Length: 345
Image: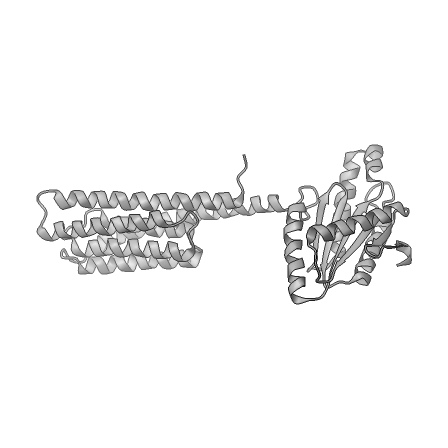
């Protein structure tokens, strides 16, 4: 089953929550072992015990973070991990492989954060590592810092590439989920969502919003007579025409079969009628198939009162039925319904 973009985001966030949690647990377990192993100095034992407590707190923070953490939560968790690891490095006489743990929060940031924040987090990690190495009892070790920096840069670059691939996948899924596969216009789901927001904005700001519903006349007969290829050509041709004729602020969608809609903020009845008439004229002049095509249209206008996208679409659909019943190739306006041949507009 294909996953939605939101499902991918939630899955990735949950995965990184688990990774950060288990990384903190593993770090704490290793430090607990160091706290009890013989042969270490008293200073190292104390540092290890402090690290166990810090990792326990970090584990709790990772667990309590919900499955879709915000940018602030990710940054806070990563900075907390960097601070804990830096503090341990600064107190241990021998660092061992501890400096490489500072790569983990930087990797989480590289995958979950935007580019600028992830780069900044990597810089913070390297600066913190340098400071910790300078303060530790064993003294500064340039080789350890350089090795860790190279590993961090290589892995974060790879992680950013994986993030980019994920973003491209999400973009493609969003495009497929929101557009009609044949015409490239918005599909019905997108139409209902965006038109609903436009209606609410009109209700708040005042003004009007027009919805024009189009239906290609005798489309089934065209399909039966000339084949589905000709029908597809008619649909794609009309979609291109409708997109070209509309304004950048308008929403144009295919909502099913040969039915299209244009949602036009700021237009009243006269403007919507004129637009529908112009589309009809352009279609008659456009040879999308071997047959002459015409279109019927129904106009409904929202003026800030009651109603929603469904009621407005229902009004336009009734007006469209009136236009069809009156002979097709014309525009009808909902409530009150008037009809006029497109040539007369």
